[in-house]
Length: 199
Ligand code: N9Y
Ligand code: NI
Image 1 (cartoon, rainbow, N blue to C red):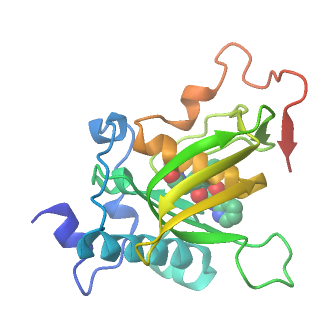
Image 2: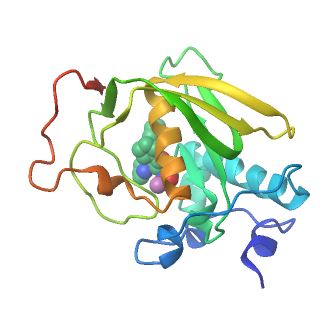
């Protein structure tokens, strides 16, 4: 069966088995834009992707389904070469239940970014990469993005901190770029001055 049809099927929940791994050529393709207005099938896909992220962050469900916890997912990771991403970044404050940033983004585009760069102190991983690749992944500290939201509405949003990093990791997937492409292979932990290191 077609991958999209399978994934959006009524009783299907995305699991690690649906996620393709490095070496699969789809991860190196430039994904195609979705049409505007967005087809119902891609709205369904986006919903399934966001549910996967929420499931993966719920310790009981993650254990039960054998999921690796994730904060982002891009359609190409499901072997669907379309410009659809889901992001679910929980609040760093345990008293706050609302996520810091959550949603499905169609045709996301960085229209402006800070001169300042930032990286995660612990480096990055990827659900499509089953190994540790140590090193700083330097990205823009702040980005302004446009996208179509899950209501089909055009949005323009400014992001900083962790959500900005996650969205850039996901948009990279839409362009065939892996996080380790950004790591300096000679000096994985070398940083230019002024780069924000996010703890
Ligand atoms: C899923 C990645 C996306 C993030 C990696 C760095 C920035 C975006 C992902 C591998 C295992 C860990 C996991 C992760 C997490 C973090 C904070 C709180 C809860 C999408 N991916 N991870 N990478 N989990 N969970 O490959 O989420 O960071 O393209
Ligand atoms: Ni990834």
